Amino acid sequence: MTSKASRGRSVFLTLLLPIAACGRDNPPTQPHGSELSPSAPSFSSGSGSGGSVTLRIAKSGTGTGTVASSPSGINCGATCSRSFSTGTTVALTATPAAGSVFGGWSGAGCSGTGSCTVQLNGSTTVTATFNSTGGGGTGSQAPAFIESTLPDGNVGADYAVSINTTGGSGGQDEFSVVAGSLPDGLQMAKFFGVQSTLISGRPTRVQVSTFTVRVEDDGGSTTRTFSITINPPVTLAITLPGPTAKSGTVGNAYFQNLFASGGETPYAWSITGGQLPPGLRLVSASNGNRIEGTPTTAGTFTFTLTVRDKRGQQASQQTSITIG
Image (cartoon, rainbow, N blue to C red; front, side, top):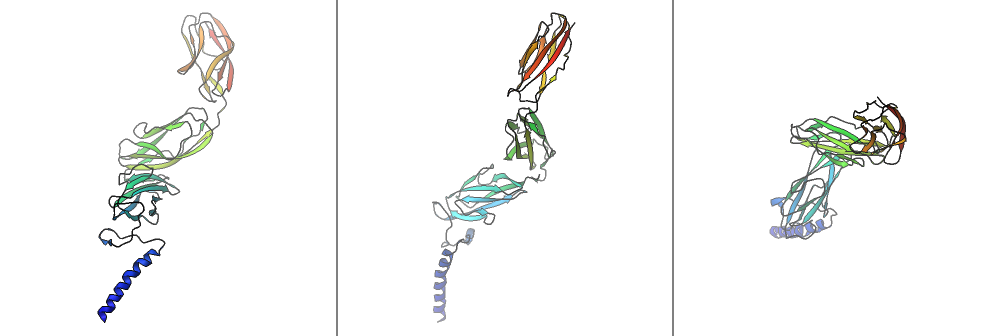
């Protein structure tokens, strides 16, 4: 009787377990390796070559974020491993939390900060790195940013500012924008010197841009978030020469640089009244704006100097040159 009862219970339990599993909204993750039962249910999506393998997500770095998969099953967060049919292709997407930036993938041939696509021919681990945007670093010798703020710019005006670091492994620092974007018209060099980069260009519109810069060397990486405000163009004005340009001498070469500020470059210069000393001419060129030549006549000559910017704004000034 005892042996019959035992067999009865055994048959009953064998039938009950698959029914309970089928009724669950979120089936349990299958055990790993040798713990897998040949009759265990499969949670994979897509076609495969038979059998199942486990995809595991590991997270590293100073920040936080989540990783999701397509086909569904990974939601890490809560679910950081899942079994799929052998041969299934899984796409992983990383989303950084507030105050963090996604630093990139490693493992299973994945790299960079885009999506990670893995074909599961065996149990696989992929690492997602999230870094804090408050200046956190990974690695015991990661470089550190010196600047915490960047200066404002103006539409149409040349902009150039360096970002510098200290510490690190002593190797070449390389910089990249890993979140957000620079103001329109500006670019950032991969490096500019051993421990610095340069943001430069000519802003094209009024805006406030927030972006995260990552610096890395052989010792690790660090991120920091910056903001640049681009203001409207400032009023165009002639800054050189003043009302009186430098004097010259008959028969000797003469040279006077012309400079303006504000407006939107490039500038175009012209003489709109009076006249230059005979023998001199105005040159408006990309390699420098100037008055040059060899004077032929003595005297004081008065003329109106006008500069016009890219959008047609102009400024004028009466100037004189004395030739002895």
